[in-house]
Length: 136
Image (cartoon, rainbow, N blue to C red):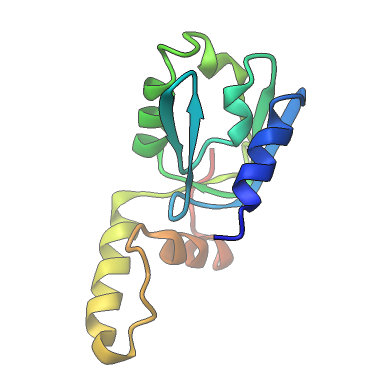
């Protein structure tokens, strides 16, 4: 671990705006605030700063159930957390079907598999690139 996340977490404590510009819920990081751990896969780390607005940009592929779980997990920390999240209308929606396709493709590749997380990121970006994906 290079520790990039720790540095960003430290810097996020003092910013007014935090943006996530690409990616999906395949990677994440855990933050600890007042002894409680929060795992973010989609939300920007600025969510730990109650005065920070958080942007999810058009390059992010958003799995709504994951986003809702992360917001739900933040309710005790900040009941109004959802009011600080702004999602680009051009961000693409990641569906369970993308995850199924990802798993099937990975299984078919067998010994040539690329080791995806099977969270549908690749298939969702494929839909985006051929212009048949759905956006917010």
